[in-house]
Image (tube, rainbow, N blue to C red; front, top):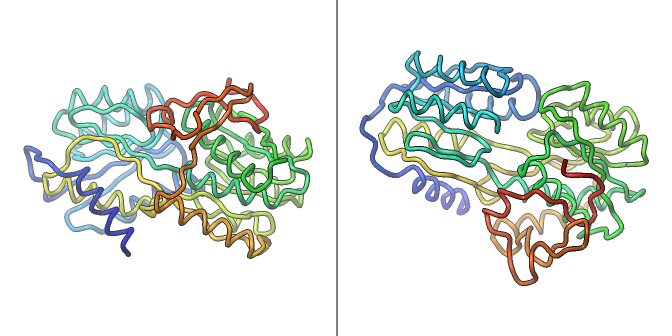
Amino acid sequence: MRKIVLFLLGLALFCAGTNTAVAKDLKVGLVYIGHIGDAGWTYAHEMGRLAIAEMPGVTTSYVEAVAEGADSERVIQNMARKGYGLIFTTSFGYMDPTLKVAKRFPNVIFMHCSGFKTAKNVGNYFGRMYQARYLSGMVAGAMTTSNKIGYVAAFPIPEVIRGINAFTLGALAVNPKAQVNVVWTKTWYDPATEKEGGKSLLETGCDVITQHQDTPGVQEAAEEAGKYSIGYNSDMSRFAPKAHLTAPVWKWGPFYQTIVKAVQNGTWKTGAYWPGLESGIVDLAPFGPMVPKNVQDTVLAKKQEIAQGAFKVFAGPIKDQSGTVKILAGTVASDGELLGMDWFVQGVQGSTK
């Protein structure tokens, strides 16, 4: 309960301020990169929408499967024209289109997920998912017998690279012989391609595979091969009950509710918000029954350390693939360094290109 109270206090500070209009009745729109049934990224945001849909004075709507770029700008602008007072744009590639539309509609508030730019009426938000990635890496490192772990990844942007690095550091913490092999799909949502990426890693000898993708395709590949997997975005165990070890997951409901209340009350102001395990927005899915209790206990103890600030994932010394020290001993990577991370840690097999 204490960590929830602290989270809400912090979020209240983020939303505090003065806005020119008080919006008692509010239309909230969400723009999605995938389908609400993807069981992943878009599904997690849809759960957030459902959490605000029953709030007093709130009506919601969404548009799914919106491509990044010109298509997203058109959809965002259409929402603004139709009287939506708050619009959540939920993919990295929506960042610049969101800012363009925001300039034309200064009385509409926009919240962009996973980007780094803000404006007077545009805030951004994400979460320290790398913390949960580290924990899931610990599980993978403990469960592999081949010491080869696979990672099916979307695009080589800092968000994804940061997660791969955290996962690898977690795996190495419990298994110094582990290595993480990365394949890029260059897509956020493509079930067939994601599944093929998982299969390709399994064929090279990986016995645990994970993902930064939006569908359970990777989980299904592991299930069919009789190997282990770690999901992402939501608990994907129902798609791979014999394979699924755990998953870093999103729980957007409390955050969306607080942002909506701030807009309704006229207290919203721009800024960036990046909660971690302490908030409950970033979390770890339940362990599969195949994960030994001693492994579970070790991971949960580390989760508590991270949530309390006693352990920092990116504390030095940390070297890149070439052996160069990128984070010095006795230092912790700054948020700026994490948000711009474009290099792999030792233990990762693959390129950032």
